Image 1 (cartoon, rainbow, N blue to C red):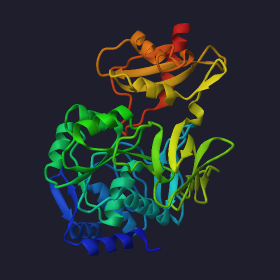
Image 2: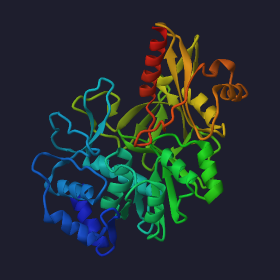
Image 3: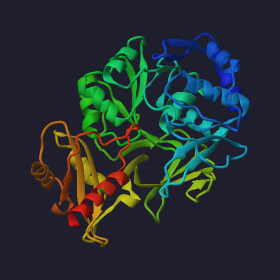
Image 4: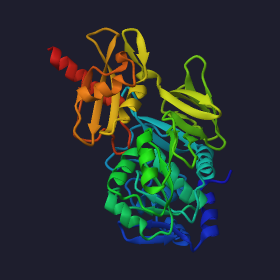
Length: 425
């Protein structure tokens, strides 16, 4: 195939004078012609790898200059240190960073074909359009932001408006200058905008990824604004996997959507986990390959079922809680908790009882109004078997999600295990 830079030059020629990029924080805008000239006018620091960072237009310039120079692109969050690894050789052109259970740096390596395949799949599946620019308020370095904002701009000519901030008033102001918008975000942002009555009326396509979209939030936004938030499920290892394209809110919280264009999915009989096949699946992990990724296949850790061609997510294989020999997926309890009108966020984990394999169920709840554990227990007892109702409760005052909208079950499990140990000592 043509290189990513050759594809970009074709896009720039086809859209020459049209708006390509607007950086609201900097107060500047670039047409495709301007953006092409800026990419040619300077170079990145020398070396085999370029490290785009930040939330402004400089991130885009760094990517284009890397493509022009044949550098590998390794996006980093602001302040994130550069990985200390040996760099891969061709045909690898892109490295995503991800966490590893051992704490060692682990990267995901992509070829140009794999990166381009994911972009093409998402543009086709979501119906991304040049007359509905993307409003970018999520991380450009994260896999979700790079796939939904950066590559659609550079490989398909979908304009990008970089917001000054994700705060409700900033989103209102950012939307005012556009006739129509596509707005990709995470559930925590959709909730904040909804509660502040800040979802712009000119949003034509609303997308949520990074964490499961709560049904109650999806329905509340639709009822208040008519905006249907489309649930999107993907992974750093392959980009897009499934997308809910329906025009009405879902009735089933486990529903992730149908597979994105050109992606095939199945459930492994031996594990019950989802397997993803497509040209978008990464080349390998780096620096050490693993059997779950490669040769066009990504074997996830997500328990799943496929009904009528739709992907239903049932939890993660390593998160199942063992309660006196009976097992429950934490998502089952979380979904029930999220039905309570006072609950804005809920996380459920298994905490070991003493040193044995048996666990007790612990719930971490963020509420939008005062609620106590007795009220929540009674609420759950009307919906779940008694053995699935949490025995331990924690009510933090701040949101559970991180900057990417993800909630770290492992981190909260460590906190609760540590607390339990302190109580026993």
